[in-house]
Image 1 (spheres, rainbow, N blue to C red):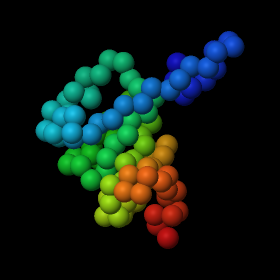
Image 2: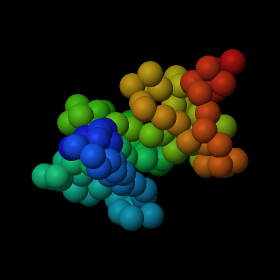
Image 3: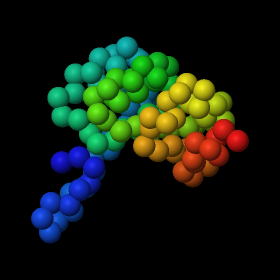
Image 4: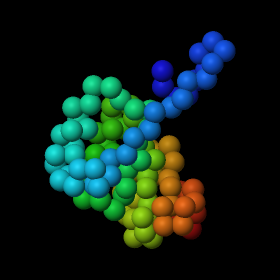
Length: 108
């Protein structure tokens, strides 16, 4: 099940994971590990300030995984918007202030 859709009378929860460099600091190894996932989550939080994160996001999106962009700084937010990734994400999370941001709030 993907997307938290109800089955019968019960609700099935979405599965969300992190790709944080705190889990695997080597960006090439992290990419290879994620590329090898045989069971996919519904959603992944991807911290936009991390090395090679855009390639990892492209891989996940191509595999049908939703991306929630973790924005650790204003620079991360600007790079995120300029990258063209913003419209392809299911959400953005401003980790610096703990708030959810809209793309329009980042741009203007």
